[in-house]
Image (cartoon, rainbow, N blue to C red; front, side):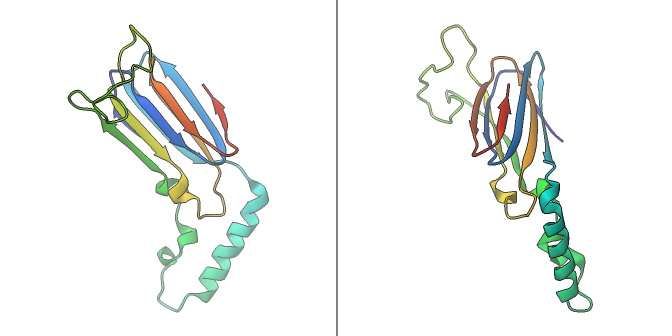
Length: 149
């Protein structure tokens, strides 16, 4: 789980091709992100088969850490928070288009979640759960992921 101090509303930019995205906007000062593998038992046997074949093909003395199939794909998901400084808006430019409307606080930073770096594994559907401050902005890019706010 990732946690970031965010006392002001932020912009959440999420890229998750498959799986599920759940976002809760609440009166919180900390943004939390949890990324897990979505259950897809139909492909687990293929993942296990590739692991077995890779271990069988390793030379003596070669560790299991040499195998890309032994890594946890959730560790390869990019999760980072970029605080905005000075006169920049949430997109990092100095020119704000006031897309959040009049009277609402401007976003103070950008949370980026990108599952693409982890998509090379067989289990490439992810469940992402985010809790962020109320009035935060959401930008989600998916192919077949369910999104709930």
